[in-house]
Length: 403
Ligand SMILES: Cc1ncc(COP(=O)(O)O)c(C=O)c1O
Image (tube, rainbow, N blue to C red; front, side):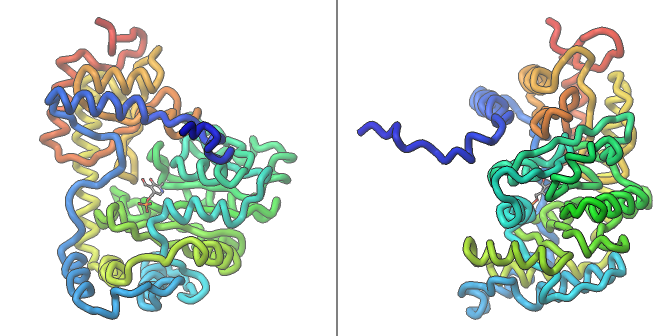
């Protein structure tokens, strides 16, 4: 039977092409050939969740009460753990019933928020480069996405002054994310004050993704939108347990902030899902209550890898500033190579997988993102393969890829 008449909904064709497709194909081929791939492509932390979290999950699994449908709005005790964490971490008071909502990972919530708040044709402001859910969610909802191109000369901060008045007046939502994936940039508190003033002036809903809240180094403390006076009146903030606690596969995140905005998302989700398995919510509470020593270990692991790779890449001609946060390096391609070509070239010649910057939007062209998700001995192997294959950064000449 000819099934050509079953066409996917138009909203799917609004999505930009999947840059990872060719990379995936090459990865599979390389694996089939027995190549020892070093995959620094995804932001998928290595290692397992902390032992006390696993123990809490096992104990919670033994309790039959946890095996039914969980409450739509998340368990009361997980919501309480979220708000206690906020008070401890940011000195911000939140109501666990109306101002905190557990999510099946923050990607789910970031995407569904657009479905809850965007009508076809609404204008949504999204930085470029950005974590893909920030623009793919609005596109699925039928939004017109206005890209705010980020530039290195502006420290990868959004240039709010460059947004035309008529665009700001039409905009319904602004997504943003500092510390940033993929640029690793951090934003000073004054930037948060400016963006809150901007959103209030134009009545724009602010969506801040604080996914890398805890992966910060050298004494740097990321800022919460909710710490800023007026932030909670116009915005929400997303968090995940995926990165800090090595729990990416568990699918646990949460959103906090303005109760009206959260209510819209809750209403949508009530119609879509039943929330997180209750046993995992119990384990997630344990994660949020872990002593600081655990965090210190995670931070020093990523800091060690960051320093090691920056130093090694410096010997190959790269001058990469030390990021104050996240689990990535944002690496410029050798002059003359675009990000897809460079990533494919690196993969073919060295078996190392990096993500082309244009996967994060056109503003990421000219860069690749490297995830710090293997130990320094493997990063050392990356560097020696680069050296052997002649992959290096030269200010004038294109060296990488030339045979
Ligand atoms: C900025 C940002 N937000 C959200 C996510 C998604 O996290 P989660 O596992 O909670 O869906 C990621 C994952 O890489 C991310 O980098």
